[in-house]
Length: 224
Image (cartoon, rainbow, N blue to C red; front, top):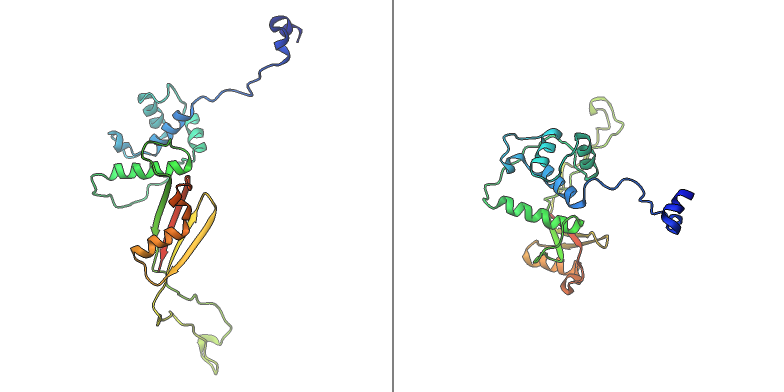
């Protein structure tokens, strides 16, 4: 203590402790590493379909994202960013020549709502994610009962209806969940057309017309 006072004067009474080692990588570097880890090797003209931590670390250094990174450090960073090594699932490749541009645009909109992407010129204040699910059939599930062996005897085994008829048609549930307000909306419509969908959006999000619902993400599902 005396040495510090002699060296720094009264400033030694107010030490400026940093609270640990500073982060090795900045936030833009972490975002860039996550983006490259989630991309396909074919998008960067690499001659393999998947890559290990070693290949990913070498690629980050070659792209000058970082000067150097260990395999364990890369694994810990990806774990903190919510990225894990998973089995590749099969799917149908799109033939749209603008598929990559549209996919990156959707990922950018998701990033705006998550706060991981910076707002750019022309970005919307409200993002609506639409999904359709249906038809949802009412199918009863069989239970268990006490009865005679083989279902015979004076009291036959009861049976349950396999399905239900719909003499009055079907109904459509237009549901929406506002992430910013943590609120669930739902409207039942006799038909599902463009007008019903737009009126449901207008009823669920009245503040969006005033431009004051920024930072909200909607998930709309139509069930039949």
